[in-house]
Amino acid sequence: MSIDLGNLNEDSGCIITCTFTTTTGMPATPTATTYRLDNDTLGTNVIPDGTAFTPPTITITGTQNTLIGNVQNVMRITVKWTDSATGLLNYTDATYTLIPLRYVP
Image 1 (cartoon, rainbow, N blue to C red):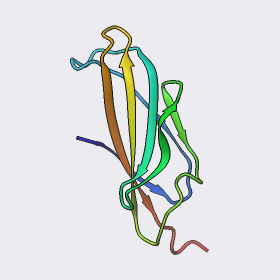
Image 2: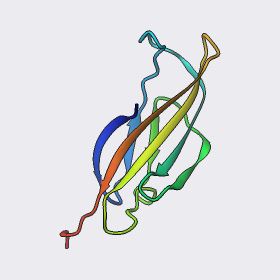
Image 3: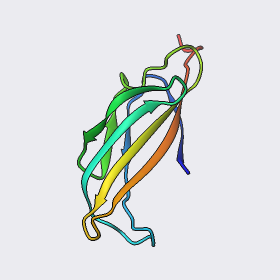
């Protein structure tokens, strides 16, 4: 199941703050953290798989959040990380919706 982050105006940058937990909900320390960003509406990749980041934040630029077409675009960010205590590989994804600014002069 994906986490819904809500709506974002087209061409707006955003910062996504990640919290890493074990399957029992305990805090986890991640290693080898990477992510990718996809446009689910169009089925296209925006930021390639394996893009490294330093936890806890991922920055998405306004250019990367460009709306394609004049319809809402659902964006999916997928985070891959390894739990330093267990060595287990984990995947988490979240979605947000880009909203067109049709009526902004």
